[in-house]
Structure formats: C-alpha cells, structure tokens
Length: 266
Image (cartoon, rainbow, N blue to C red; front, top):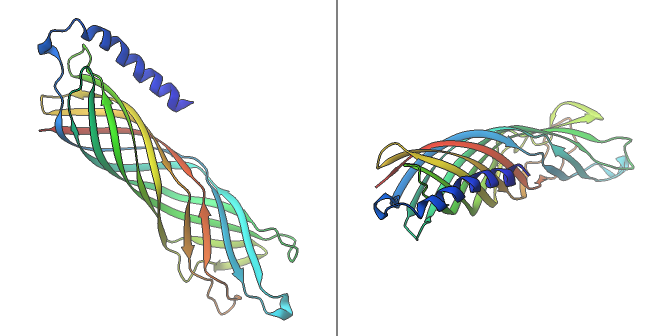
C-alpha cells in the first residue's frame, strides 16, 4: 500500500507538467542525459522472513538413534543501510526520456534473530535461538522512464528492474535454549555461508539539476530478494553428539528504502 501511494504521488507530479509541456517552445524541452553515472546511499527496513533449519543429530541407537531436526521460525524485521552506484544511457522519445541502466548496491541488513521450534516426540520442547549477521550484494538491470516538466531542472521518474542478490551470512550462531546447551554453537565448524538468489525492484523519485551535467536525486525503492538456502557446518564438539551439516532456508524478503544520490551526465 505504501509503495502504491508513492507511485500515485509521483504520477501526480508527472501529469500536470505533461499538460504544460504542450505550451512549451521546442527549445525548452529537457534534453536526454545520454550516458550518465550516479552514486547513492540511504536506509530503510526489511520485513520479517520465514526460516527453516534442517539437520540430523546422530544419537546412538541406545539413546533413540538419529534425531531429525526440522525447526521453524521467523526472523525479526529491522533497519538496513546501503550504498551503490549506477551507469546508464538515456535518450529522447517524444515527451518521455527512457533509460536503461545497471545498478549495484551493497545492503547491510545487520543481525537478524529468530527463535525456531522443532516439534518431536522425543523431547517435550526443542528450541533454538539463532542469529544471522547478514549482508547482500545486489546487481540489477533497470528500465527508467523520466518525464520533463515545465519547472526547469525538475524531473520526476519511475522505473524497475530485475537481477540477482548474493546473500552472505558471516558468523551465524545457533544456540539450543530448550533443552539448554550453554555455549554450544550448532554451526561452529562452519558459521559462514553465501548463496545467490533472484532480486527485483521498483523505484520512483525526482531529480533536480545542479548544472547541465550534474544533478541530485531522491527516491523510494521497493527491493525484493527471493528465498535462499544457506549451508552451515556440522556441530563439532567433544561434549556434543555429532550432527550433519545444517541447511537454513530463508523465505523471500522485502526491503523498503529511502535513497539520495548525485549523478553526472556526459
């Protein structure tokens, strides 16, 4: 709903200038940027995400044999920060300035936490508290449509794109809290993991010219990162039953981001 409202606001800025543009002289039309480069940064928040932790604890037969773990829970939501860059080419097409661009951004999602429950008849309760320090590198190919207005140097735009995201987790920790196992990280032999997944975004904003070759811009972005499996090492302690490697399956995640940047055209 918030994203639709943002698009509606941006569209309202574009409609009035489009009517006024009919009364402009040809020399008043905003030229296309041609080749352009930009850098940007900002912040926002991510939604909560479903997570499932899968593995096997190899108890001996005298203790009931192997115990399958299929623990489920949900990460918390939280704030994020990001920086990025873009390169593109914009050309004129009537009253619209279409552009194709490539963007890359580094998204610091902070540490996500989740409480996971594993239902089993062998234990009255089987609970894990997990932490996942998470960072994503995202690459997107975008189509952007800009709409010159009757206000010199003020150009609203919207666009979207698809690409991929490398989701990296460094220093994950899985602590069993019930039954309690103090100081045992179930990922201790391999707490780092990374994997690629699908990504897409939609964005809407306004850029303001500083000169004929420089401008600043502000925008709202909705970023979607698809589901991804992360593989962590088995539990290896002298005081703990051995386990298989652990697979943590993260559901899709949405990011709502505010962006500010500066660009240059050539």
